[in-house]
Amino acid sequence: MAKYLLASANGMALLCLISGLSPVQALPNLESADKNIAVNQDGGSYKKNDSHQSNLANNISSELLIANESQKTLSSVNQQQKSQDLEVDSTVDSWQPILPQPANFSPPSDSLAQVTSVSQLSDVQPADWAFQALQSLVERYGCIAGYPSQTYRGNRAMTRYEFAAGLNACLDRINELIATATTDLVKREDLATLQKLQEQFATELATLRGRVDAVEARTEKLEANQFSTTTKLNGEVIIAGVGASGGAPNDSDPNIVLVNRVRLNLTTSFTGKDLLITGLQAYNFLGGVNGQGSVQESLGLAAPLLSASSARTSFEPQFPGVNVNTLSSVGANSVQLYKLLYIFPVADKLTLFAGTAAETSDAFPAITPFSGEGQESISRFAGLNPVVRVSGGTSGTGLASAAGFIFNISPNLDLRALYGSVNANLPQNSANEALPGVSTTPLGAGLFSGSSVIATQLTFKPSSDLDIGLNYAHSYHEINILGTGLISSDIGALAGVAAGTPVTLNSFGSTVTWRLSPKIALSGYGAALFVDAASNNVNASTAFTSWMVGVHFKDLFKSGNNAGIIFGQPLYRTDASGSAQLTPTGDNRATPYHLEAYYRVKVSDNISITPGAFILFNPEGNSNNETTTVGVLRSTFTF
Image (cartoon, rainbow, N blue to C red):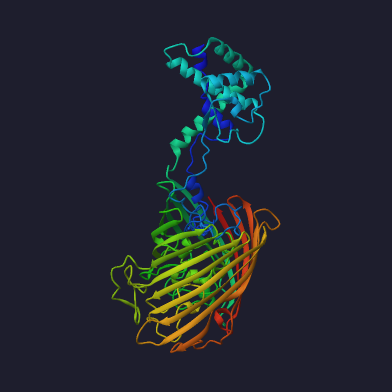
């Protein structure tokens, strides 16, 4: 009899299986961390953002950066990753990036607890002799485990398979007693009862043993082939066709181009509460120092340096084809490290982050549902408030070394801040000049001596339908730029002032999203950027403003299909004093406007196609330029 009993399968594993549990342990915090990485990831997350989503921890947007009520993980990978699951509602709780759990976080226990009576399992119906027999065995030998809630998962009758799992547990327990006991602890009549129960439930026990064998085989395969016990890999591939018409007078329309961007993100947790995000990317956008080869340069709408323009797409890096730190070229589809960021909780409401390749959008929730470089808006204008983009805050290449914190004041209010330095790895400025007064390291050198930014965001959620974000940034630039990449006047922000003039920026912005219904949201932002010459030899200042309003549709016509209609004013110089010009020489001043529409079609859980177009009226604030249309057909693959 003992040998017969010892032949039974492991009852506890079977009980877990039947109850809906898997014997294979997952990394719970890594699972939550991936829904971003934001890295608003587009990474990122920091809402659940695509690539990161580009916001960390949505969009590390976020596909990057970090925390909320239970501190879910950064906006990259913001929108990066906010971005992996096409079912993700880009309008819901977008201000809460995915974050590591707080230091004292203890997830609800789902572990099995020992019970001493079948009657403790409240959903088991004591209807026949089998129940009474098993109850007697459990009470005598303590051999069944149930959940702390005293149910097997809900208020329902116990099935024959569940009963068989409990019986199997008793078989295992009695086997142990027989194998180890020095005295006769198992009564002969109990063995007879077990034999009778085995005969009555022989089919169910055989089925359970088969299931356990299958699970064990799959577990062995996973253990042999797993990538890592601490690291998860996710990725995003964007392939898009881009065409445009209009632009500067007398310029011919550019040809339709086929472009791509590939991102691979490794999210690693060492403690289950922290997160290390490592991101690699490659793209084939062109531009370089003078913008040559870019669509916006062909339209005649780009700045003469670095191709800043209002005609730029959402998934295009801010400085394509060039390492702006040293003005060295970057070859098409060369692999680069675009994200390296470590996030870790230090207290119940406080999370810190630091890294050498980070973006402002990794830390700050996007608020607007149009954020998501691979899934939502197709233009750079619509995705984020311009204040988040100042100083290369969303360069798409992890331009800055940064460190900061996320303080969850309450479930509906959090404060985030960071310090970022662009050329922290360079000990000295280059002695060579790219332009008069501009070295070949135009952003300076050193952690505290070069171009830098201090940025903060207060995120407020007064109700479940309303999200509000307030932004402030103070920046210092070694050269005369805004660093947003949004308009051609981004380069030469103080019009009429030398390119090598250092400047300081004080930027203010607010973003609001109001969900009228679960599937319709209104969203908009406003921004004001104030630029002053930082040189004692120059007296000049100017101001830029921008605003946007739009309506976002979720599950339009079909579940998973999203759409957006957006209208607004790109950054526009509204004031100038001292030696700064209000309107650059040769321009015919006019207020620019941006109109955009897109429709994202969910092909499968991992594939989406987004056709869309945006129209620029008075592009770059110059009525001499023709009305410009940019059309995009974007395919996004996530894995």
